[in-house]
Length: 217
Image 1 (cartoon, rainbow, N blue to C red):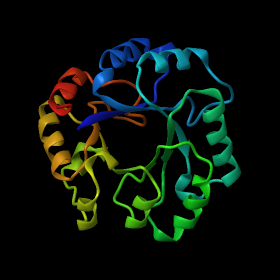
Image 2: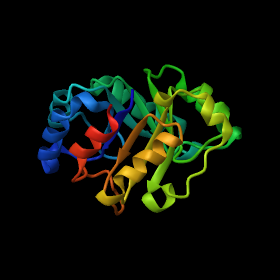
Image 3: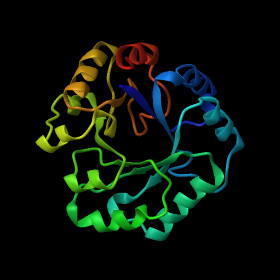
Image 4: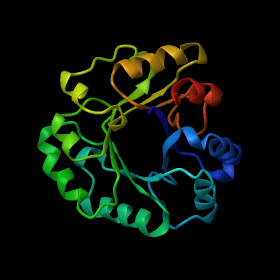
């Protein structure tokens, strides 16, 4: 079944209405990525916990890996904070390398992590990563780049629920074309937004209701 996956990089203190709207569409959402401050932040936040739990959807804690360059101790510390401070079902590892040389680094990091674990490569990685993660983000970028997307043959061997696309800077007139391209690329999880800028995930798209109706069938 197709579903939305929402990178919720917005705080209820400044985007409370968006959290309430998101809770209203909970049935069509497979997972919500929590990102308090490029990770879990310095301390747990009750307001964020309450807003996230109200959605009734599985929550994934955001952890930056800086393409395998980040200090492993810092990665592990973020993982532990998410597990200890928030009711997360799993983790969303961002800026994951696509290169096979980093497979051992990520294999080591996975030890002890609460599943599911999603790897955000933002592009198609070496196929070895599919054996490590529960899902792969094989595209993150603007509509203009999604329009030029090509798919390697090995992707076709994975079930759609293991592939995610995150597409921003997409006007509503191009929503249908984006969803059709996502389906043709074999991905079953998607999030499309009209927002852009340094953080296009800082709120919900104006057309969220239409996106849920068109994709979650």
